Structure formats: structure tokens, C-alpha cells
Image (tube, rainbow, N blue to C red; front, side, top):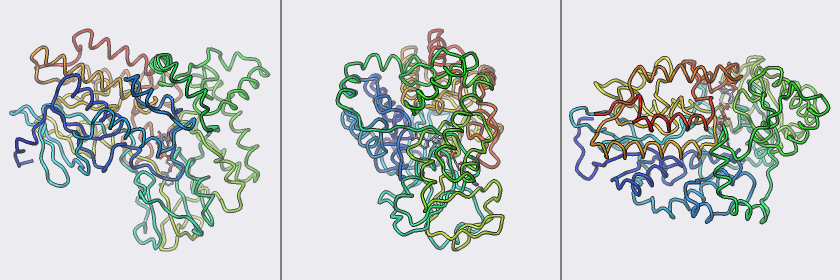
Length: 539
Ligand code: N01
């Protein structure tokens, strides 16, 4: 970072990323605070995660009418969703609509990937460098890089010698991939693999799914939205918004007060059947004790297992698909459209790579430890992400005295409220680790963070303060609260979950998000602000 930035590249605030988070933060800082802001975005359009995730079947698991900005009624009323869950292209169209309506593009520099950021203590600014060698500086640096944008591509022996094509779902070719007549191998059965499987199966000559850990999934029951429902959402905007802000996961539905363990068997069965018919994320709202009590969880897990076994015709495949190693919903819950049904097709097969792990990628396919070579033309890595911390660590951020974020986080993330890190003045991390982030409907968490950050900067300006960072002891205490919140749920029991960093070799094991609920978290943040930003040090 030796080069001094020229005056044109000096801003009040720099934002990295033009997804939901970067777009709203830009809007707030520019329109509410009048700041001179620049967004740096690696892609050549808005959309963030949705700009890159164009894999077959990519669709949001949150229902359309709740997967959008709700800070502006005008913006909400001006858009119409076509299906119960929005498909990736529709989400990108929506985000372009929002960018146009809010006139955001003029302050976003596309095709610009940040390669480093360093705090300059003497000048009191962040110096940011891009891969193309451009330098920027700003008083505030705000990361809006998403939680799932750093791909996890396992370093299998022989990968680069594969004669066919291979892709990670998180950086899918914009022109698409033609599977017609191809033998396709798909590694990974998380949300992505489950969404992609039935769609790829429709055109591939053969699809082989390589499963390490089976996952529970419930039907999404996607469908076109009826005009009556579209009108209802518009007429009930305030209620929907209120509900999203009041619930633990930011969805506009409430978890039932009933306890599974106290509900008679017949009644339990009736309720589970009804919830199964509703499907999607709402299925989990059926009992209050689902994520708190092993016995309650088992009741629901057994029901889902039974449904899967009824769907998959081949008993051996069904057994592999239900050899679960975790309690229901303790890894990211999955919803699907015809995933288990896909295994009833003649052109789909399942390979258990826990029993016989992938040994190497050969020029012609994948060899597993039982000596079988699975011949393939295309390999798809649906192998997930270095979640939550990965996107931040790859920015190569250095705080005071050149202290690397990777050094501070070598044993796991440390933050205050997931918003700031001691030693990194004026750096804000939207949906950062130890905030609700991935445990919520993301736009809700994003709006809350962006608003809190804008308020904090406004507070500083009103009080003549130029620097803010958390006190180290307060930050450490927050880490303990995050751990306690996770320990109070069954989430902590899923040892193979990416929520714990288990999917990336060498990643420290730490629960990555605040599991105490979005509404409670909002209250905590509001309380901190009301008490003069208690726990933060200003200069
Ligand atoms: O990734 P994952 P994802 N050998 O980490 C397997 C969000 N999302 O992209 O479980 C063999 O969940 C791995 O196996 P295991 C959502 O938050 C949202 O599917 O580690 N297999 C697992 O099966 C989600 O949680 C939506 O044993 C290997 C899979 O790859 C998050 O993104 C849609 C392996 C990875 O599953 C990530 O989902 C899609 C190896 N070496 C995603 N390494 C919507 O709402 C990994 N695996 C739309």
C-alpha cells in the first residue's frame, strides 16, 4: 500500500460489495447522511451472491414477499414476484430494479475486486487496494461481502488433470452449461446440491451424486403466485414488515407455542402432516421445542425420515439418504423441489463417499476408495463455502500497527455484535461473524446492520468524533454470549456443520453466528446505541 491515492479516490466511506447489503448501505449513507461514498464490486452488475450463484435450480428458500428490501414501501409496492420462492434470475432482476429506482449505479465501480485494506493511523483513513492496482482511501470501510461468497473447492488429487469441465456452483458460467448427453458428477448434498440435482437430471445422460453426509429436506411446494396473494402482500406490507422484524429468524411467520413432547401422538401426526403440506421453512414452525429438546427433535426427524423413505423407491438408496449424523435442522435446513424423487429416475445414482471417500480425480472421472472409477464428462462442486469469516479474511485486512484480521481470528472470529473488531477502527462488517446473519432471512439482518451503522456514523458526526472501535474486553464478552446462545440450542450438536466451520480443512471450530434470535439481537443493538454506544470507544 505504498502508493498514495489520488484525490479522486478519497471518499468518506468505501463499501465492498453490491449485493443487498452494499446497495442499502450506499443508499443510507448517501441519502440520509450526505456522505461521499463509493462501492467497489467484483462483478459487472449488482446482486452479490445472486450475481454469482447461477447454477441450475438456484432459488431462494425464503418466500418472495419476504426476500426483498422492506425499508421503503414505495420500493416494495413497485415490484411483483411471480413464484412462491424467487428464482435466481428474478432476484437479480429485482436487485437491478432497486438499483435503478434508488439511482445507485453512479456510485458503484463494477469489475473491481479488492485485494487489500490497511488502516493508516496517522491519516485516520483506510487505504484500500484493488487487484487491478487502483488505490482508494476513506474514513470508513464497510464490508458488504456476504457470508457465502468464498468458495470451498476441495483440493482433490488430480483435479486439474480432469479432461472434462468442472465448476463450483458459486461461480457458475453466465452462459450456462449444457448437460445434454453428458455424464455429470455432482459432489455435495447441501442446499445447493439438493436444488441442482433434479434440474440437472432432466437433461444429463446420467447424474452421479457423491454424498458425504445426508441431509434432511422438506418439500418447498413452489408455485406461481396468484394475483390475490400478490394483492394481499401489498395491502399488508406493514404487517409483513412488522412480523419479519418480530420473529427470531426474520420470516413473516410465527413458531407455534406447542411442545412436541407434550402433544398426543395422533395430534402430533396431524400437525406434522399439515406442516408438511405447507412445506418450506414454515415446516419448522410446527413445534416450539424442535431446536431445544432432543426428544422433540427426534419426533420431527423421524417424521421427515419416514417421508423420505416413502418417496425413494430403492431401499438401499433410501437408507443412504437417511443415514443422518445430526439432529433435524441443526445444519442449515434444506427445502427442495423433487430432490428425493430424482433418485427414482434411471439416470440418477447416489454414491456414498463417507463409506468410500473420493480418492482422486482422474482424467476421466472420479475414483473412490473402493477402487471404482466413475466416468464423467462434467464435475460440479456443490461443496459450499468458507462461510462467514472466509469472505472477510480473503480481503487481507490489516488494522492498527499492521495487525492482520487473520491473526486476530486465528482461533475463531472475535467481534463486538458482529459489527466491529477491536484494533480495526472505523471498519464495519455487515452481517459479520457473531451476528444473526446466516441464521436469519438475510435482507432483514442486512437492513438492521446497515441502519445501525448509518446511525453510529451520524452519532459520530454529531459529536465531532472521527474514530470508533469496540473495547477489547467488551468484544471478548460478546464472544462468550454468542457461545452461550448457541449452547442453548441443538445447533451446537451438529459437529459436521459449516455453521461451526467444520467443512473447511484447518478452519478453527467456532460457532459463526448469534443464535439468540434476530429480534433479541435488534434489541441488544438498540440498547447499546441508546446508552451512547456502550462498549465502543470513540476518538
Ligand atoms: O454448501 P454446504 P451449499 N468431499 O456446505 C459436501 C446457502 N444456500 O452450497 O456435509 C465430499 O451446505 C458437504 O459434505 P459434508 C445456505 O445457507 C442458500 O449447499 O460436509 N463432499 C456438503 O454435502 C447453505 O447452507 C440457498 O459432509 C464434500 C456439501 O458438499 C449455504 O448456502 C441455496 C467435500 C456442501 O454443502 C451453503 O450451501 C443454496 C469433500 N471434500 C445455498 N467438501 C438458498 O436459499 C464438501 N462436501 C437458495
